[in-house]
Image (tube, rainbow, N blue to C red; front, top):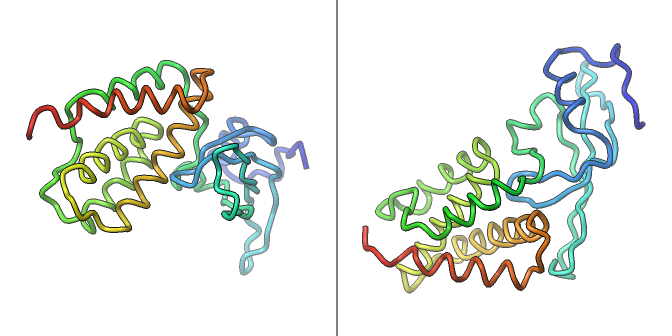
Length: 195
């Protein structure tokens, strides 16, 4: 279903989203990574007919072979609130690298992980790629400051890193290895001043 007729769209918000996100677009979905919009579908939920984007994960050479993501149905009306966004643009990639290299932590390292994680999720949803950069910066600092980091923190940090590095490399048209070198050099500055 490549074209959706206007009479199928019930609210102005849906119309705007359907103009902004089209079938076969590459998108980022929160901290889940890169997807392609494969279709726009209607599903019956109770007595309502709800419109969904069908997101298919895009494969990448550094993806773990054992992990296989399945497709995701994301309600059109709440897609952006749930973290659906376009890939960053080059100026955002430059800004992300600057953010990684500054000495700002963006969140308090004194707060417990269980209290901070929802704040990280919220900044990623509200600020997109730059929110993802803030969350990565913060989790990097936590991992470095605490010898015994909780497994959940380590996994969360690795996921953020994977999503951001892949997106950054593509936007800058560089290899993953080059992007990793840039990130490593930038993140060395994070702990130079003690907050």
